Image 1 (tube, rainbow, N blue to C red):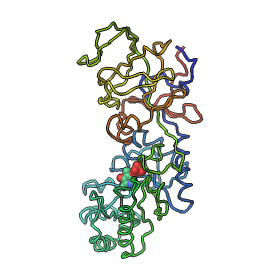
Image 2 (image 1 turned 90 degrees about the horizontal axis):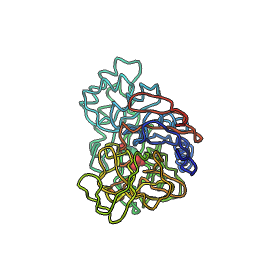
Image 3 (image 1 turned 45 degrees about the horizontal axis):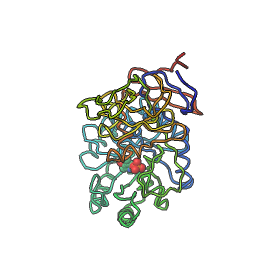
Image 4 (image 1 turned 180 degrees about the vertical axis):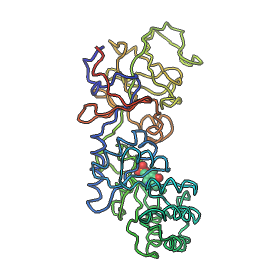
Amino acid sequence: MSQDFPVGGEVWFGRPAWAEVDLDAIQHNVRELRRCIGPRPEMLAVVKANAYGHGAVPVAETVLAAGAQRLGVFCADEGVQLRQAGIGVPIHVLGYTPPWEAEKVVRHRLTPTVNSRQLALALARFAAKEGAPLPVHLKVDTGLSRFGLPPQEVEDFARFVAALSSLETEGLFTHFATADEADKAFTRKQFAAFLTVAQRLPPIPFRHVANSATTMDLPEMALDMVRPGIAIYGAYPSPEVGRSLSLKPALALKSRIARLHRLAPGEGVSYGLTWVAQQPTHIALITIGYADGLPRCLSNRGAVLLRGQRAPIIGRICMDQCVVDVTHIPDVSLNDPVVVIGRQGEAEITADEVASLAGTISYEILCGISARVPRVYLRGGRVVRVTTLVEEETPAPSLS
Ligand SMILES: *Cc1c(COP(=O)(O)O)cnc(C)c1O
């Protein structure tokens, strides 16, 4: 094992493909967002999709300790997972809940988005058996054309919900289509449409519209609550969003060298032999592949960091492994740590860089990191928790 160069702390000696999640960075990002909106609005931290790949439960606990009041998920099961971990704060199901999940929502005291009379009636029926009314939120579609009620239907629908005594309309919200673009004209239009709807209703305690981009670029739209997601994880929603907050990426995706091998000119690499050595080449096998979340379209295009230098990915990325060219990097050894996303020494590969090579956005890269990749949680550079596919375990402190 060579440990004589800066790699940001070698902390994990389990499966050699893992994600390190810096909980201090998440705490920092929550505080930065808070700084942006001031003390008054609540913060609903969006932890859907396994907290954008970072691990729902550890992230939820961290954001709540850092000053978020509520959590947001997409579907009921994601909320149940948090409840089962003992989290008691309001958990909003931001997406569509089919009526047949009403009982589950009520049983776990989740806060649903109510979009139909059928769902409202189903929720009301189960909530009637509880001690207190169930808080629900109504969503208005102000131009994203995705989920929510058309503005002209909200007033009638709100009256319908108000008549159900076991439901309490706690919130009204909308979602923006272009908040991450430099031109905020459409966002302002959506915001105005939202306020118009809100003003036609009896007072509602929580009116909320702001995703990460809105929270950062248009904090005046924070209203009663903001709903940041990606910024909590330290990525910017898009290159067009202002950089006034200093966000810290929370996740690093790492692996290790599993084999070193020399190729003679003319020898090919990986399925299809799409890469062929033109000269004597030193190659390293890395045990991470597209089943872990490394997009296959980075074949012959991406790179990893090894000993603080870039090593190009050569040949096709396989399900579980890929090969990199290390000819130009001296002294590489078996088990050397490799950074797929993150920093090593002075070098850095961001989720945005991987995303742009893959023709997508950081969101998709982060939430695509699969369940079999262990998550190693850090506080003050020390491992505080590990989740793996098979169990929670504490890692052995070192290899030797
Ligand atoms: C995902 C989501 C968010 C968070 O969006 P980011 O761009 O990640 O900040 C906020 N609100 C709703 C309704 C969402 O679905």
